[in-house]
Each structure stands twice: as C-alpha cells, then as structure tokens.
Length: 119
Image (cartoon, rainbow, N blue to C red; front, side, top):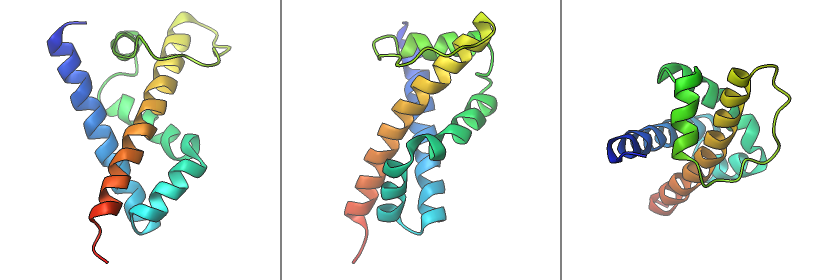
C-alpha cells in the first residue's frame, strides 16, 4: 500500500472512531457508560455506524472495499459470509473488518476520555 493511501486510511479510521465515540458518549451520557455499552454489544453499536461511514466516505463499492481490505491485509477475517456475489462478499468482509478495528479504536478513545473526565 502506498504511503498516501495509508495516510488516507488512518484519517478515515481516526475520524470514524472520534465520531462513534462522540455519538456513544452523548447517547449513554459519558465515556464510562459508553465504553461499557460498546464492550457489551460491539456489533450492535458499530454495525449501522460502519454502514453510514462507508456511504459517507463513498466506500460502499468494490473499489472502496478493496481500499479498506488492502489497509487491513494482516487482520484475521473471521467467518466468511454467504454473500451472493464477489462484490457483496468484498463489501461484507471490508465492513466487518473495519467495524472490528473501529470498535478497538473507539474503546481506546473512550478510555482516554474517561481518564480525562473531571470528577
């Protein structure tokens, strides 16, 4: 992967994690409750958000899926979906892997916010 593409992916991930953290903090009224909820149900909290991020950043196509998958080439894919086309498989895999990484990054941000929270 070229360095400029890596930089674009890192920006995408950081932006997505910050948006998800802010959304969860607002919904659950603080970083501690948000972190607990994210750890309790990561797919429920990140799934619809990943769908929206892929649409917002124009990644909900084969090229976008390949960009994300190339960025995440060393991550383990877990279960392979039963998609009906290569395009659907690529999108499903890219969204699942990005969602897993997004949850991890958002947990880190919420832990930081929790540590800085005034008592």
